[in-house]
Image (cartoon, rainbow, N blue to C red):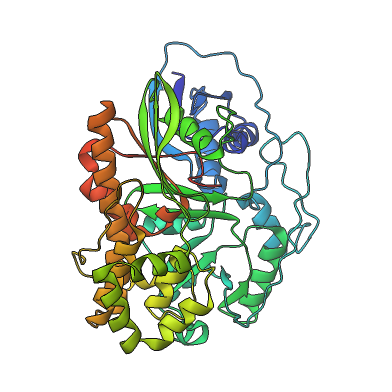
Length: 471
């Protein structure tokens, strides 16, 4: 009896369906693949038991995991369909399992062949994607790590099974993970690091050479590339420089509003939705879309440390705080004075005396705290905008009280989450809308992401399954 499998696939990319088509052809089974509306439909004639067994064997061996995969539903059909061959264009994805086997098997004609090109997903063009990265056994500040031996993963890092599946998916994203290996901690001077598994022919050959030389890992500078987080069961793309995520339709001229409308459409919010956009690049804003149009209803103004400190100095209570803080931490105030261009996260990192002055350092510091419940950081609004002075003053006050830096960093991200929840709840009442979209690259921080999931879960906040959350 023919069967139909409906595979949830939150992407327009056609390579996964292409791999299925290749396995159908190789196994000799009668079958076809189609893709539409975030689903891949697989039709198979299972009357030939040898062919169905061969297809199952090949699928288990050669079909790679994908970060866009969802649930699979199988239906028995009364009669079969006409079968046609599925075609897919070329994509900048990793070497497929079959090509990787050929590349690393000494008995293969393509052993160590750096010119090998994958056409196992029925790609129409054998396009070449160059890997210009330099891989080294020596760590330099800001390097990412290339995992050269999958068998060592649990020795080197603390990762969930879901994170490991995502790491070795066909898309090969970059993940931030906790370092377990003490030698690696000492070498990098870090407790957390961005890692990627080999994703190109070049990186696979380099990894093979490293394994044979008993080098446990290599370092390289990947840039943003394809950054993904795995929070609970959510797999979320933060940024995508490789073009793997869903392509945005042109729904609005404003980049932030356009992304909001695309994600709302993906979520099925046809008529109205509210969005919290927490972005390092584009700033923090809250948006509303309804029958009247789409707009930013709250937009945090640009943070300039010089202006904020001047405003604080004119306030009776905050001016006293600045005097006390300057007396205890003159070097911090001097650095803030010397770097008047510092933004919000550079300023916070300076107050916390972190080595690196950026969002990444603050985020990593927050991950060091493993308790429950943070401090109450002031995230109030003044008459027309977010009160940066009270926010920074609150952080300074806890610093004066000798609060541990990791606890304070954790509390800051919890505060961003609580502020977002409060603001969204107020906008829900004002606009009578209960569809919520979350986006922005600040959600790369798991404290913030988890806070939204735990404290706002009854409102079902939507994180995109296919679009990147930020530019």
